[in-house]
Amino acid sequence: MKAWLLYLFMMLYFVKISTTLDNGLSRTPPMGWIDWERFRCNVDCNNDPNNCIGEKLFRDMIDRIAADGYKDVGYEYVNLDDCWMSHERDENNRLTANSTRFPNGIKSLADYAHSKGLKLGIYEDYGLLTCAGYPGSLNYMDIDAQTFADWGIDYLKFDGCYSLPWTMNKGYPEMTRALNKTGRPIVFSCEWPFHQQKASIKPNYKLIRKNCNSWRNFKDVQDSWDSVMKIIDFYTKEQDTLIAAAGPGGWNDPDMLIIGDFGLSYDQSKSQMAMWSIFAAPLMMSTDLRTISDEAKEILLNKEVIAVDQDALGKMGRRVISRGSVDVWSRPLVNGSYAVVFFNKGSDGGPSNVTVTLEEIGFTTTVQKYALRDLFLHRFLGNYDVRGTFETSINPTGVVMVTASPVKINKYRTTNFWFHC
Image (cartoon, rainbow, N blue to C red; front, side, top):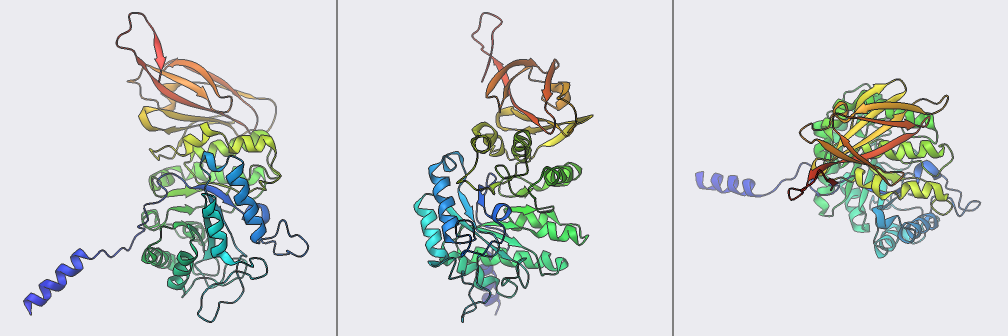
C-alpha cells in the first residue's frame, strides 16, 4: 500500500498541471488591428458590403497590413471583435461563423492571414452572451478553446458581459486552463478587471497577471479626445497599481488606437501614440487602413515610438512631474536609457513651455550626460548634463517625446569629446 501511494505521489509530482497561463507569448505588448471602434457591429453586408463585419473586410485589412508597411514595423494580429458568429451553436455545441458574412468560415480566414505572415484573433465572452447578444462561452469554455485552436486562432479577446463579476476570479482562469489544454499558443486578452471595476470590485492583479497576456482596466475608447483623456486620467490616478502589474508576458490595455478615424487632431493622434507607448500598452489599431490619411499612417508607422512601446525591459512609464497643464512621463528602457513624454493636457491658447532637469525626471545621476533624440521630429537634440536644464514647447493637447541614452567617454580620447551610443 505504501509503495502504491509513493508511486502516485511521484506521478503527480512530475506531471505538469498548468493552472496559470502557459503560452510564452507577448514578451512585448501585442500589436495589430481590430475592427470594433471603427466598424462596430455593422452586419448589413447587403447594403454596406465593404464595411460590414464579414470576410471581405478582414481580408482587405490583412492585405493592407501585409503590403503597406504595418507588418514590417510589428503589427501582426488581425482581430475580429463581437458580431462575427451565428446566433446559435451547432449540433455539437460548437460556435460557428455567420455563414452569409463569412461564407468560407474562420479557419479559411486564419489560413489566409497565416499565408501573409500575419495572425488571426477572435472575440468571445465569459458570460452567457456576448455584449452584442451572440452566444457566450459560459459552460462551453473547453469546447470553445478547442474550436479556436482547431481554426488556427492566435489571439482571444475575452469580454465579460452577461456575467457575474464576482465569479470572474474563478471563471477567467477556467478559460486559461482550457486554452493551455489545447496546446496551441493563443494570446489571451481579458476584460476581467474592467468589469470588476464597474461592479466596485477591486481587481486582484496578481491573479489576473497569472492568467492573462493583457487586460482592460477602464471604459471602451470612443472616437473622441475626451475619451482618450479619460483613459489617460485613469492611468495617471492608478499608476502605482498598474505599473506593479505589468511586464513581459502581461500588459495593461488602455484599449484601441483611434488614430486615423474622425475624432482626433494631428497633435492628439501623436499624443495617443506617445502615451500608449509610454504605458507599454498593446498597439491595436482600429481604423480603415484602405482610406487612412498619410499623416495618420506616418504616426502609426513611427518606428522610433514603436521601439519604446516594444522595449524589452517591459517597464510601464510613470508620471514624474505635473506643472500647470504639462505632465512629464518617464519610462526606463534597456541599457540605462529612458523615454520621456512631455504631455500638454491644456486645450486653450498657444503652446506651453516647460523647463526641467534630467535629474528631476528621475534619470540616474551616476551618468553625467545623456544624448536626447526627438522621436517625432527624428532629430538628435544634443547631449545634456543630468543636472543641467532641458526646455521644450508643447502644443495644446500635444506631446514632445524624446529618448535619452547615456553618453559614454571614449577611454582612448585625448580631448574633451563626448559621443552618444
